[in-house]
Image (cartoon, rainbow, N blue to C red; front, side, top):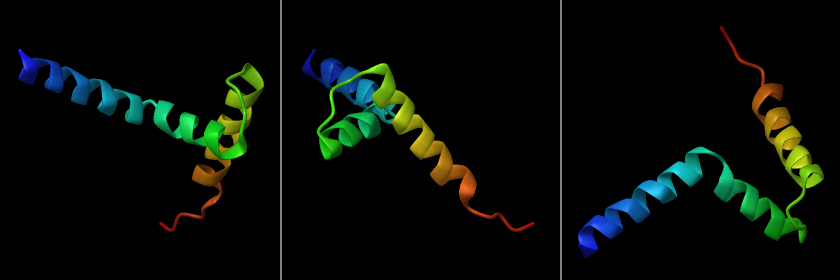
Length: 58
């Protein structure tokens, strides 16, 4: 039973990482912000800017 719970916890942690929830929590902690629509928007904009501002070759 414990191994099943551990597996579930691992899967949940993986899904949170893939959905950027962990990155968002780290962003809130870094800037000392509380969760809000404005904070999520700023986080999303910053991530998109970093992702798409890099030039790709070929």
